[in-house]
Image (cartoon, rainbow, N blue to C red; front, top):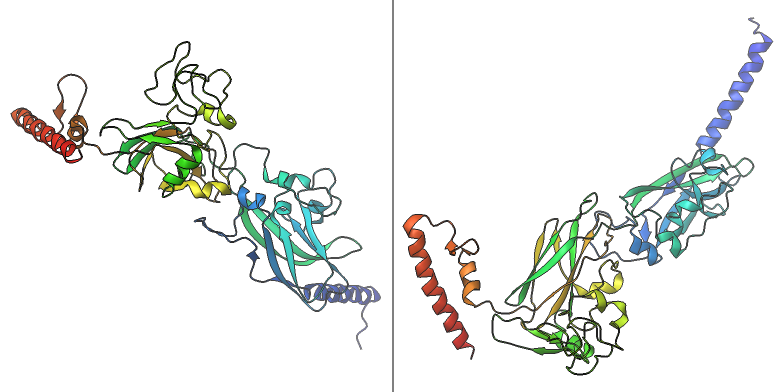
Amino acid sequence: MIRLPARWWVGSLVAVGLLGWAGAAAAQSVTIGQVTRARTINDTRPNTLYISRADCLAGDQFFFPITLSSNYTSYTFEVWAGPNCSDRATRYNTSSPTCWKVAEGATSTATTEQIAVQAMVATTKANGTGSIVVGTVDDCTPTQTTMKPEDLTLTFMLVNPSTNDYVAGATWSTKYDLVGPPAPTGVTAGLGETMLKVTWTPPSDLTDLTSYQLYCFPIRGQESTSAADAGITTMGLDAGDLDVVIGPDAAAGSDASDDAGAGTGGASGDDASAGTGGTAGAAGTGGAADAGVEASLPANCPAGTPFAEGATPDDTYVQYQCGTASVGTEATVKGLVDGVTYAVAVSGLDSVGNAGPLSNVACEAPGPIDDFFDLYKQAGGTGGGGFCSLSGVPGRARHAGLAGSIVFLAAAALMRRRSRR
């Protein structure tokens, strides 16, 4: 018979005990089912579970179906947001915690945890005490002015209530971004028949710019209603001339009350003549800009224009959407009504779905292009630096082509004008 040293025997018992404890701990498990959210996403973001500022402001809720193993009765169930939350030091560190608790509950074999987006993004509320963080609308506005999509991880865990140590768990990750791209600048609108060609200069920071959204007022298809509501009167002029939009109270003579751009004793809008003692486009005595918005708009914009440079589009702007464009410098808005002046603004969109602040506002009225010079340019003519020429036509052929084009375009312009009268 072989006698084993007593020291070896005691050591073996300790080892067996540790293995048994490890096996019991390993038997615990947490499983996450199909995650859903309360809000219906209607956009083109790469992942419908990404979180934008609009989602946060709307008070989105996520639903997590959770299944626990049968050996859970000795533990508590908690949900933490942040990186590496299984490490106790990330949760209980009063000086610099990196995780914050967003939910807790009694353990049961199956449950569904409902967690608010506002709590999930409340990164500044990590307290190191283990108390639940309650998010608010204020958490939807970050302290930084620029941002790119950042990782957000939730850890669903069983915890030893005596020591707050992690026992078992599962993680779920997504991305969030609460700031849209910078605004494009220098927006202009060139007229065409039932369309406007909108151009802009991209922002210098293209870190997370994926596309552009265009907004138009009046709303397409509701021009008559919008004009009536805003007190707009349109006056159609001869083709090739810019149609004039006159806002309410914009009559010549007396001070224009409550109409942006009205001069004392003068009319407002395009082609407005300065009245005695006033200059067109300046606010009349006793009349300030409507709602503080129209003051920054071009003088020819329709009354009631709801856009302001630098404003961040929210859900109410959906009705004004009139086009999108991939990253570039121009887009064409079609389906407009000739003779109606539209206000157009552009906003950048990021990969999470945030709309950045609005660009400057450009206002223009679409209309037929049949003036001689317009047709001449459409045929390839260029101006400036002396006699006009058709690009790409060399030598004598250029002059012959130009002469023929001049005759043809002049005749075409005359015929189109006569056909409309």
